[in-house]
Amino acid sequence: VQPLQLAASDSGNLVRIASEPCLSFPSFSPLLAEPSSKQETGNAAKSNPSKRHRDRLNVEFDNLLRLLPTSEDVAGRLDKLSILRLSVSCLRLKRFFE
Image (tube, rainbow, N blue to C red; front, side, top):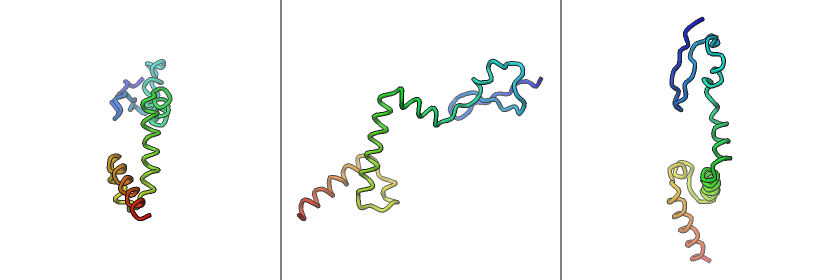
């Protein structure tokens, strides 16, 4: 039986780095597997109302950004406040020219 070699992943979880299956601690092997980030995000969004709210807000900001007359390189650098400012400016200009 090879000794168990562990390393910390980016998310702080311990992961097994040995190529052989762990024979000395079989009950701990599921705990050593790193969970997929997609599962973590899905579970966090379901159990955390604040996360769901932020996700919905971000989707609407993305929709609003697509409606603004900006190039892709400029749109990629805009923060939420800038998106709101540009949206208000566009609406004011539209109202002025009507």
